[in-house]
Amino acid sequence: MKARSLVFDLFGDYLRYRGGEARLRGLISLMACFDVPEATVRVVMTRLRKEGWLASRRDGRETVYSLTDTSWALLDEGRDRIFKRARGPWDGNWHMVIYSVPETERALREQLRKKLAWFGFGPLSAAVWLSPHDRGQQVCEAFAGEPSVRLDVFRSRSGGMAADRDIASRAWDLAGLDRDYAELLEVYRPRLRAYRSGERTGADALVERMTLIHDYRHFPFRDPDLPPELLPEGWLGRQAHEIFLEAHGLLRDPAESYVDELLGSAAVDQEAG
View 1 (cartoon, rainbow, N blue to C red):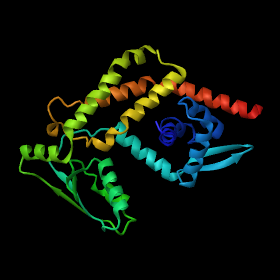
View 2: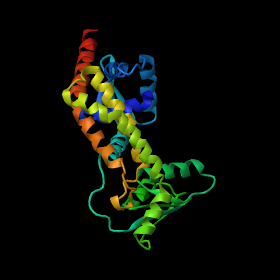
View 3: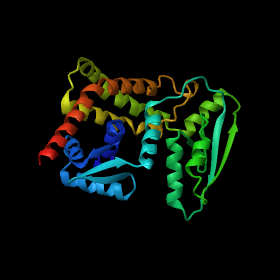
View 4: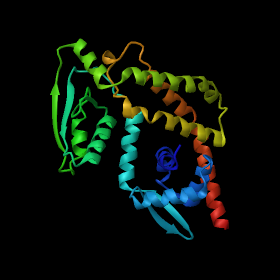
């Protein structure tokens, strides 16, 4: 796990529920559980502050870092995509986004494609992306401040379910995604017994839970959360999601207890120093 990603994961899964802020000494203690050196933590925190993801203030001799509004929005959006799944029957409509970005704006085009994938859209062609979910407005809002981006949003239906399944197979690599889900299940399904019995405690529970999040959080970028009727037979995505939720929940109490213990100890050490 990269130190930068780890900071976001720690804020997203723990620190946001503890006021959205943490002392530098506490962050150093938390990151040490993942073998991240103190010097690296200091550099990463400074960069995140300069980039506008974190704010800082002084409290005596200690620096306290807190989430900015931009970070709160990012974490809320990320949590929805990671933890929630679409419910209810599909109405058969495809929601399409056709975009136009000047050739000179390659970085902006790549940013747009990443955002489309994040919202669950898949490319039917280079500039035509579609989703079975009505999220076109979210894409438009995300790029409302970019005059170089032109977005046209449509809703349409295909000729029938056979065509719908063909569209899904062309817009997403479902076979490759299913194989990766199988690998995730091979790793974490056998560990559920230890999680259920409470064998993971202290730093072990914290590292295990953060590793689980790290291993799983890449899937929402690739998984469009398709309705069951569009998925291949034997699809493992929903099973993987359920095991992720169970494992994440089982590790919650021991991991959070250890986070509180570390942050409390760091505060005491700071006062004593």
